[in-house]
Length: 429
Image (cartoon, rainbow, N blue to C red; front, side):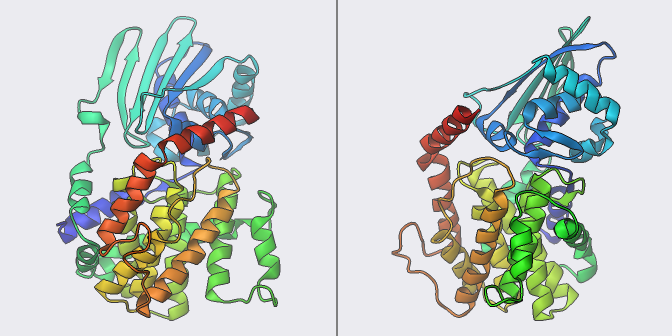
């Protein structure tokens, strides 16, 4: 079981800013680690990725760039030279870099292909110049550089198994806990110790407000905003949650230049965890201590579920994991007991499991609005002692078994589904 100090360390490592959809950013970050090793003119870039990175990066917008897709992200990264920025590296795009990117991609000098043998998060970038051949590899997590080679000489190699991040031991300890134990350790932290989580609230609130005076995406947030307070959509908690989550997601995945606070390695997961819990806390008028503890619980449950289902699932983990985590956080705010927090997980497992992931794009705003509305519904029914029956489908007696069943569906049951999704997406190209 995590100690309080370990929980805070895990949260600080896991809840970090990100600019742009995380999969294109990951490819750009891999390329920047290779590109910084040369000053020679780039002739070509070859990128290999696992299926999940490929799928999530195909249609996602890139901040500061009018183009979408992984080839453009790779080209940008190759010219940026700023790996120290991590997931915020795209904030340094200049007009000159955009011109270099367009020239390189216009010559069809950037290729991206799937490496089917790689099941986990994987990006390999090979940059060829007039005089150099440089290869970089990211594996396991979006920022985890594990290999760098220049002209046949290994510059850097990480020997940790599968390139897992340094906080792997904390994640493994978290996986051994129950949802009740996660709540227990969060309740030992003070408002001051967890106040850093409010940075994510402020950051994601700014992102949610971005589309109020700017045209983004296809108009999903605009539609909800225009109907808020009408006979169709009241100005209630449910509407406000759906509006904020969809607005933030639509802006982010359309290439909005504002960062988002991520959770469990993804920006959209962060806004799906943070905004519903924060909005519910404000509506209920709870103390700051209660609010930040609810946020901590939601982030930890999000990481817990993602640890079982993997980084890039055939199912929409922003809904299956992050909305479920938000439901637990909302149930906590509503005064739910340990048992009732478990009911929230059970109800979500019987509601949202099976929503497919067909890549990162503005349409994800619809998915996370749906997941967030389910999060509130499942939290409310949970605290009113209305759990789905254990005999229902993949539901189980304990929340931990519900999560394992969700992971089983995603990891084993939907493997062929993922291949068909990618096949359909490839046909459209």
